[in-house]
Image 1 (cartoon, rainbow, N blue to C red):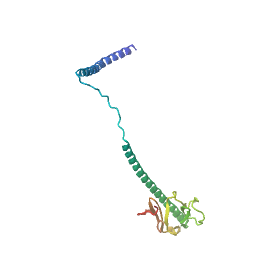
Image 2 (cartoon, helix red, strand yellow):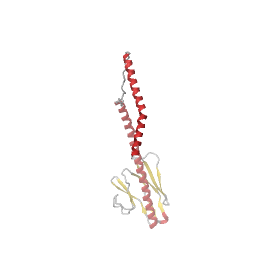
Image 3 (tube, rainbow, N blue to C red):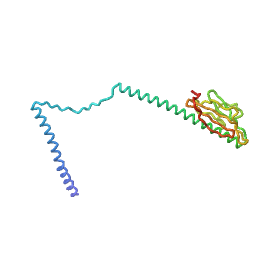
Image 4 (cartoon, rainbow, N blue to C red):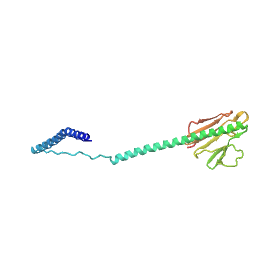
Length: 208
């Protein structure tokens, strides 16, 4: 313990001997600067030490208005593009769900060797597809053989009359189903052998 105490004393002694010349040098420069200022003032030379300018320069009102206008324009363009992308994704998701629905009807007709005809039902501004032969209930019955789009903006443009799948030789009545919204138009095509595929319709959409 005594050795540790002596070691600490020797360390602080060396540190003070090391920093003492530096402190003396700083004091010397400060005194020389003050003496120089005093001599210049004695000779009639005015010496004014200007403090550091810490005033921060901000933006003017016009600059702020221009920046806000640019931000608003970019935000409006981005929001419009985002809405168009959302509508396109809703349409693509609906057309894939419609293809899955027709595939379900085709597989059911082939497996049980029976006919599955696609019919259209309308309930106000909503529409749905069903293969129920009764046809008395409206859309929204929730049956496994019913397809109703999730979004009201999806419109049914055209459907081939008599579109159906037959269990005999796994055949089908060829046709198409066209759906659209503000983002575009797609078709679901069926061939005579029950092949189902989706195709995007080029050109202007009829859902604007």
